[in-house]
Amino acid sequence: MAGKQLPEKVQILLPGGKTLFETGNRSLLEISAKVQSHFATPIVAAVVGNELYELTATIEPPAKVRFLDLTDKEGRRIYQRSLTFLLIAATSELFPEAAVTVEHSLSKGLYCEIKKTPALSAADVAAIEERMRQMVKMDLPLKKRQVSPSEAMHIFRRQGFEDKVALIKSWRKNYLNLYRIGDVEDSLHGYLVPRTGLLHVFALKYYPPGLILRFPDEKDPSRLAPFVDQKKLFEIFREADRWGAILGFDTVGAMNRLIEKGEGSEVIRVAEALHEKKIAQIADLISARSSEIRVILIAGPSCSGKTTFAQRLRIQLLVNGLRPLPISIDDYFVDREQTPLDESNNPDFEHIEAVDLPLFNEHLLRLIAGEEVEIPTYNFTTGKREYRGKIMRLDDNQPLIIEGIHGLNETLTRAIPRHKKYKIYISALTALNIDRHTRIHTTDTRLLRRIVRDAQFRGNSALDTIRCWPSVRRGEERNIFRLQEEADIMFNSALVYELAVIKEQAESLLKQINRSQPEYIDAKRLLTFLSFFHPLEPSEVPLNSILCEFIGQSCFFET
Image 1 (tube, rainbow, N blue to C red):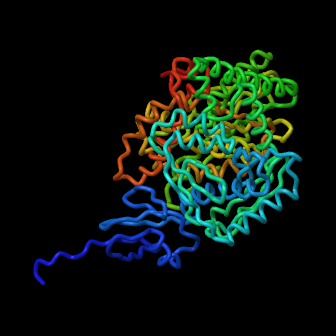
Image 2: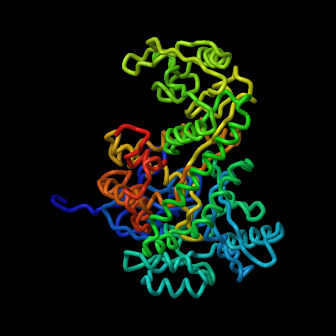
Image 3: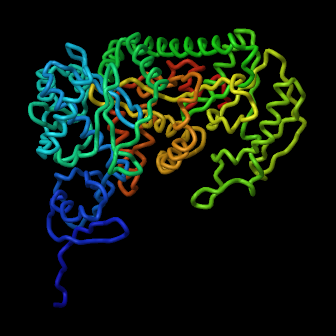
């Protein structure tokens, strides 16, 4: 009939480009049940208009819905967060007096500690896993409600969650989302799945003194990620715990209390002193083998602070009587037309074959032998190596310092005997938690560093940085993370106070991303995350700090 208005619809985007339509108000849970067969793994949430929604939400047409399963990074976050809550609930049932602390990522899973008497045993871990599986089989609801901050503090005090009470004292919203399984009510500061029956793929591994909650594999979420023991990484996290004990706190709420008391400046000074002491120790280890070590290799993921670390290590080596010289891998790039291509047929400058490995190794051997070598300079405009009369020669007390993503890869320096090399892995591995049940992702710390740095020094918006971040992460997985246990030593570049310093600058940049952009989901999550921190003044940060590589005013760089 002419002029008749058609009913507004909910458009559902499915894998493979398919689309379905529903009319009228619809529960996302109801719709997800209808379309689950189109997905390889359980649907755990939805995106509607670039906003993240839980499956318990009801939407009104017109709307465009994209469901998230475990092939989506945000879907994986929700699944992992929900598994963490399941672990907390199962432990509470079996060991009511035990205290669960979520520590950090490890071996493709999440390392947690459970403080109890007697101490956690392998049998305890097996019992907790069995209870978790029973709860999955029972398909229990994760009941959600909104409460006022004062009511949340009362609930948390009753359960002994004093760290959560400290955090909520600075909570800006007039409500807090709480979830319940059995007698445990908690907030993990993010969305959860609606029912335990979705959480089939997991395992617990006893890893003294705690356990590892193992997650689905990113590439094939139908199975567990393969377990790879990371003993060196575990030890550097234990060191971070010791640093937290020296500072007197390990959660954001506890740090906020110190800032409120006017002790933020001291927190900065102690954290920086811990960094300096560790760098000096590394310099001492190298100096003790100075007759043997001729090449120092520094590698780490994006925004780990490699450049500032290399400068500070150089100074400590000078104190020990060594005079290290840097050499840039970038100057040994092959001519641009010879650069390997990535999966999109674009030049892949992060591929190890983008470096002229034969020439690089020849020059290293000659330098170590005490010969003079003319070092090339790579012209990034022409895409060619040029020789401009840059002559280098090493004395006996002059090791080379090489910084770059391939530093841990033996292929890069294959001509140099292993005993003549000292490999250092650096990353921002914060041990600071939001609260005892909610960790700070090290990836988020590095992303926030990059957002602030790129805006200040490269003219990039937060939108630009977030948009390119998945590509950066893929390169890290391929070139760095799989080799981190090859390092002779690891350095944790995280500063426990740093997010309080970059908070205001990062917030102003993230707020420029609006709802019309898919990256709004990441921006909103990071803004919520930053809202927990009380600010600290950037002027309090010493000029040689690794943090100044990102916020500016570093004494090592021209600004």
